[in-house]
Image 1 (cartoon, helix red, strand yellow):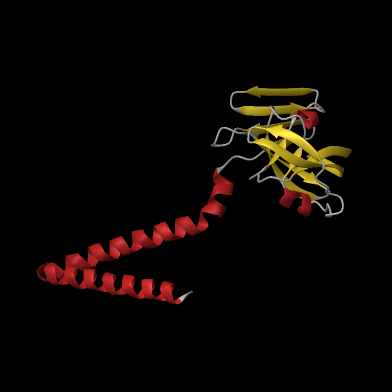
Image 2: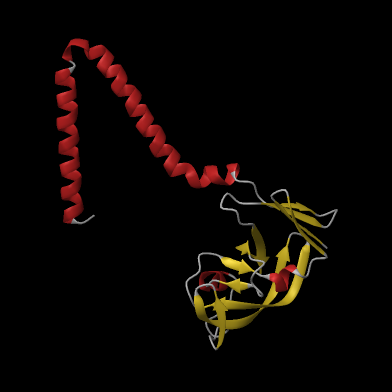
Amino acid sequence: MSAMDYGNLAYLILLGAVIVFWFFVQNRQSLNKTLQQGAVWGLIFVGVIAAVGLWGDIRLTVQPQQLIMEDAGRIEVPRGPDGHYYLTLDINDAPVRFVVDTGATSMVLTQEDAKRVGLDEDDVIFYSEAMTANGLVRTAPVRLEDVALGPFHDRDVRAFVNEGEMSKSLLGMEYLNRFARLEINNGRLILER
């Protein structure tokens, strides 16, 4: 923390102490009730802080995940809260979360995901271009050794690494067309081979 941060923290502590002191002075006739209310508000504050801190873990249990039915050769994916469908594929044994983009032609990896799946800087050479919703971007064509979605494995899959900023990798129609059936029904994306 910098000196400015310590100064801000000291100011906030002093301000809080003054407010608490004023509150107790104003309510000194009913001090027992004031202490009870203060304890309730303190517990509410601690609960909110705990919920914010644990939200990442809570979200994983609340938010529905993809369902893989190996016997039927079927994968069902619920629509996310933001209206998109997300699939997690294992690329070279590294899990990568994709947003399903039926408007995209190819599989497009972020630079971070490309590093996680083991693509070296020597493998990623930005010499091609693609037109996106954000305009023209440079891309690097790559080959992915092993791409797995549940029981379905594909070898030597063509993909691109985007040089621009992307929050998530995109799963386009080139990969989705490997499935015999692709259906969006009742808030679920269904893939079958």
